[in-house]
Image (cartoon, rainbow, N blue to C red; front, side, top):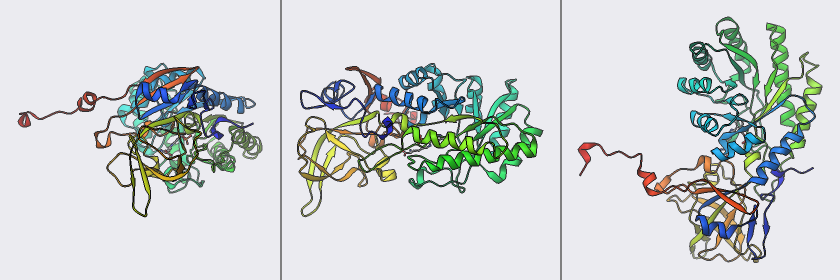
Length: 442
Ligand code: LLP
């Protein structure tokens, strides 16, 4: 069965009777008129469908926890939807913990992750009842034990390890290779375990955590990752008599950004994970563990699109034609950061023939602010609405106010209804944190 991460567009996308793109039953051009552009649009049906596909894919395995990797895109409304779908939250900052908490996310089911958590953030996690902390390094073991002790609690933890598995994705989004800033090297695990057993009495080690990378297309990596973690569990059982019960496999499943991308289905990943447990757990003399999966991009990426309005164009004599839109690297830094490639269509006339090769440029003051290079499009005119697909993950969440440009709004569409889930910033909001020292006042 194909799953929604293999679709280029939100699953409700179609062309309506006006000849316009329609998503979630809403005319995309009307959304642009109503809310302005740039605009992030999220299709609730795609999010819920993929969440269900994750649950179904792991249906045959009795002990699975789904955690949504909030870093991909988090707002209170997204927390509500994924909480309803039974997901916990993988959170990496006080801000993410606070958002999940405020929106009524299930804290007990959730996990705090990250390579440099502060004392205050650990305190917040313990206070808000976050169920599990994935401890990344020696300093954090000491800090968390202190925090737990001062709260009279014993905190369940995982140890984040670097399993030494490389994947073929952009080097900035690989994390599981040996020379990584994240987690304990496997050669450091014994020292950490001995500290937990001997000194850190307020920490309860229940398992291991790894994350290989993001936008992964190779399914065998998940088989290997499970194998490395089970082997380590077996080794720790033999050496220390430790019965670890959990492995967290991180996220990473890729999505389809262009017609050339062929990501695997969720079922294929689940099959690799489950078969690796079946084959390898007995080999290392360990019980089948409870597994945690932390998908981010594959949950939210396909559901989100960004709408822009076309503005100025420039034909370089004997060179490229640039067409500029009203957003760019501040609302989607991925093309300039990772050379990410996107697919776009003209929302107000998606069926027009693509006769011109153009480069779609952002509005920010950087030559590198190019959204798509050399793409075939109908002849674009000022006022056309461009719909960029697959911007749901790591778009808003990595957006900035570069050039003091306002962050766009985000709307959620479903059953022909659209609702704001993040307001568009206004100029007053932009200056609201600025302070002028008295000596500079006029
Ligand atoms: N778990 C851990 C520990 C992670 O570090 C990440 C992502 C995830 C889960 C979720 O991975 P996903 O399912 O989304 O691939 N900004 C980059 C992606 C950075 C991913 C960081 N970690 C991008 O735009 O491609």
